[in-house]
Length: 458
Image 1 (cartoon, rainbow, N blue to C red):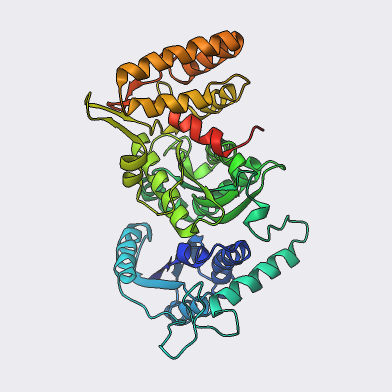
Image 2 (spheres, one colour; image 1 turned 90 degrees about the vertical axis):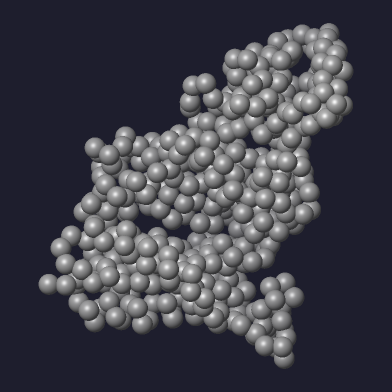
């Protein structure tokens, strides 16, 4: 007897959520996206629900008419509920075990995603547009999507009156005007899914619970943070810049701890790991660009760890123009001394949760705190970085003078900084701030200085 494997892939989620920099709209859009999975489960009783997250749905229907009902209705409901989001759908008729057909369904969904769709809020020249979104207005100030987001935001806080409400980013930024966008994604989930077989449905639910619990356990009461997307092993949050590193470290630890408890992983892997990217920016910086950078940094982390270990990368956006990560590395993170043919890279990461012979997050945080001490040579080290562009010899002499002055002013703090650098990397010290790493000459000082300049002591 034939069965029907249904798949849906939601597109445009990031664009829908981060269309503007209004926090109330972002929160509302996040709630709308989160409700997609609930709507599917409530309205369509699948005989086997394999995966059901905000952007990825896979289910089995035993009756053809039940599957046809979903195909005809679901895309329309979601498109009308969230203007700007589209859904790709695909169905495979099969007999036997469903597991052997999931990869084929994924391929069909990829083809569907490449087919253009007409958005419901398309405009013609005679329509008046919202200048912030370039979408047609339905009132004096709002387009349809913005109105939907604001309504969802109001409904969320009415439903959860005890939740701290951030009306705009001025409530979330630190005293230096900085916030952070964090994107986290699990490692190697595709390979795990292929081995799960009939355990896929149970695993999907347990993974969702593990990710949500990891988020809840990682968020301390003093942290100003708002989750935007949590689905499966995929997490995007916005937070006060002061809390970003600590929260991310906590989440990576808790994610590994919680996934160890998932029974379906027994015999496949001991636990799941994850990688993260943190984009620091001003509150008025275009959010969709910051999200793109956070995702790119997450990808850099994955490549560095070969998708095997938990780690993170971060960057503080200082320019007004958006650049791709490789362009940031070339323009801001590479010191070139053409006269002496020296190239030094300032992207010292990735920073690992717990891996020998690699820079670890905890050691980086401890090193940061050591450089916050009174008498720390922060401003002099900025001069040292500038001198590297001109002369290696003069930069070495300057560093020697910096260490002499620091030791004379506060010998104990000087020893603390040196000790923390050695914990951070055995080859680092106050006298040796440039080492060979990843086949290049690198220094962690730029990363240390940029975090110190945009965050406050705990």
